[in-house]
Structure formats: structure tokens, C-alpha cells
Image 1 (spheres, rainbow, N blue to C red):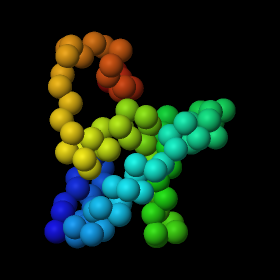
Image 2: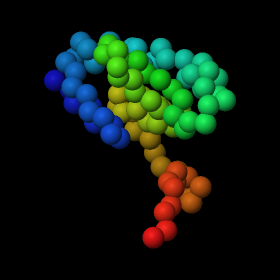
Image 3: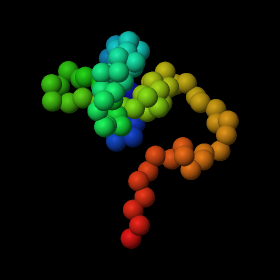
Length: 94
């Protein structure tokens, strides 16, 4: 059994289902989804449909790339320190 925990979702897959899921993820056309929702004021434009009709996973490009790296166990080496612009967070002052 494989357990995938990424941001705010958790998936359990057996070995065969994991391979099918990896193949499905690798075939997603990121450019298509970003173009389709280009005019929409939403951050996450890449849609991963699931077998459950009322559930889809939404990603932006960097999240999708990180998710693929997790699935394929690719490690990403850190080259530079984060800058303020790298952090996508809305600051609320109290």
C-alpha cells in the first residue's frame, strides 16, 4: 500500500493503482488547462479529474510539478534561498 500526502489531500493506492495514477498524471496537458482557464481569476487552473464525479484535484503549475516529483520520487535540489516574492501568502494584519 502506498500513502501519498500532498498539501491538503491524502491518497492510498496499491502498487498497480499507483502506476496507473502516475501514467494518468504524466499525460495531463498542463498548457491546455492553463489556457482554458486563462481568463479566470483563479490561482489553481490545472484540473485532475477523479473517478468520483464530485471530486477534482486543483493545482497551479508549481504545485503540479511538485506533485509529479513526489509521485516519481524525484528530489529537487535547492539552489537559492527563498525570496519574499517566492512566498504566495496573503498577509492579514491584526
